[in-house]
Image (cartoon, rainbow over all chains, first blue to last red; front, side, top):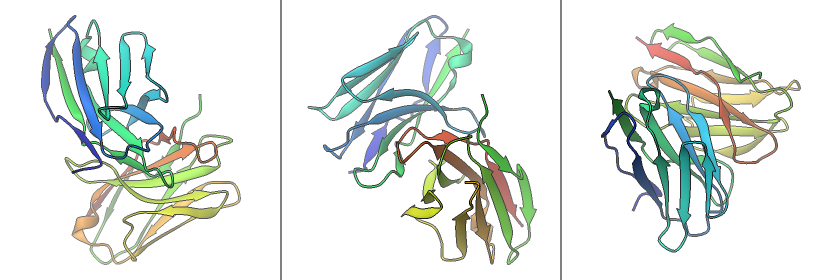
Length: 110
Length: 112
């Protein structure tokens, strides 16, 4: 099993709709989780950090389910500019290198 | 706010040549990380430095070396370049060895 896994998508989302997708991780000792957003050929940009059960920032909500070892990202009222690849990132328990989950591609359409 | 700076942004080299990539972290950030991202792939961790000492090592080829200098900037030296080294190379920085890493714009290396 991969350390971090995501549904690659793409998720085709009508503008204004809500979309949610999950990320599963294998290391039950993981304490922190991150969602990054990456546009084509650009750098990953930190979207949200999750240290406890979840986090919310405007239209974005992250939920952590430790029992089932997954985190989710929900985007409400999708904008065209939300089209990107969303990377689930889980640091290794030892050290600080980041393990990426492959990314979920989201396409918001008018 | 100041971000991570990487130079050059684009680099074209021939096989067997050498390349040096530079990274200037966010001011007051003392930890630098290097990642390699091939087409359609996740960023892969190469190496990191904390307070000028190597703190972690990933899948970095022996042909590559890196260091962090007294002003906290870092350089990734790549020798005997191969076609497969063509990729985006990202530098990220953080304050302390926390996990919130902020990425630079990347250097796109093309080996011909």
